[in-house]
Image 1 (tube, rainbow, N blue to C red):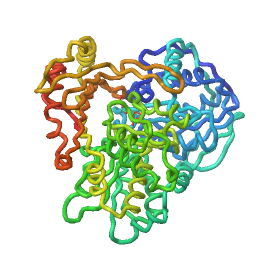
Image 2: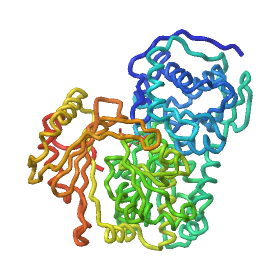
Image 3: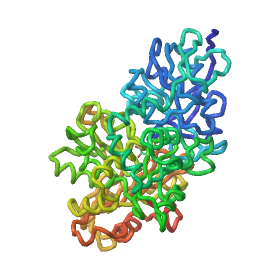
Image 4: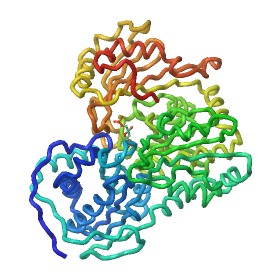
Length: 544
Ligand code: G16
């Protein structure tokens, strides 16, 4: 086995964003591009010698080629054991599960999440630490620093490995194990949820569901759990085969992109429950018959009912939500006498809170929900949580949600995205807001007075690290809030995200369309930030 040292030099733009490095495939295919980043990871987290590394991805275009490159580099960097998902497949929560189960040193996840796949689409890579979670900011910063001063990377000369046959082989001194990507994760789910009760629900003939895997990574997981283990009828999982281009679709589980699923929840033959996951299996959308559950409400409802689930029957320690997520979970935490933490956007910020046992459940408005069972958000876990809840409560989804609103009130929420906006204009908009924050206080927009405004900064309660400039928050006189921030996961131009939420505790007013209930906040945001002029758009591209 010949180890090779390849001379290289820094390539600009390898700074990890909200969730690792996401770029167009063609950028990753440039000479030394992926190699530089991988070597920067190994140098930043090393020494790697004698350690175990987990490798897998969502199966998108370039997944297999990237895995071959990473295997050769991991061998050259001294890892003694590599656990690689069969066919290069491992969902993001499954990577987290496998790292934790086998006490690996870390893992590499290849995915650009919900972004489309294909030769002219997106690819991504991120490093997860020994706790199974995305590397914290101090590590991603160090990876970036390494990428700025790299002069060489290590690899070995070897033929491409067979990624499709389960079993072990040796490459030099490194044992490479091709593992079943599903079994450890499915066993973990079976240890948390009441599978017999869920199976009775799915096989009793009265309840039907549909899970849309969107031709992304969760297909094999959903087939094994829902159809094989729980006995749901064949065909319950649609679009179940992972494809390199997700069948030309956009594997983003929202009502626009999961339209095939949405159509099955409406009409005379509508199913009772629908769910979808994203490219790498960490996001979820859950739907009842003709009923959409906002992810902010989903987190609050799961928290309020957690003790009905075997894995959480002893109660939960606390809750966390990302800052732009509505405050619905805070009300549940209050009611339970628990703390609710507010973190910046990015799952990595939940890691310390979970590790320290300060929280059990956490979630984000961006269709992410999870718990301390792994250190990633977990799409299928959230779907199973809802199924277990329905099996226990024996109520339709809409009734569970409406009862929650009657008890706690409703935090109306919506997010407006302006995608592919000119980066300079988007940055200017945020800087302008930041510079005028204090002047805004006391001014009126669309009939609402600004009560307070700030640029969100977070101090981690465990390691006390601080993260600043995490989003502009504006609080209005009707109790509503507007948040402005730029996405850290896009690959083209900038995406401006504007988040709106407002509390309503009048039981007669909790069943409105959020776009209607939040109209004055939406109008105020345009006046405050001059969105139409700055983006050149008269309406958002995506509304969630
Ligand atoms: C990632 C992060 C999430 C974040 C989301 C959107 O999710 O893990 O914490 O909420 O991106 O981030 P942004 O608003 O910066 O685009 P995923 O599912 O894309 O890996």
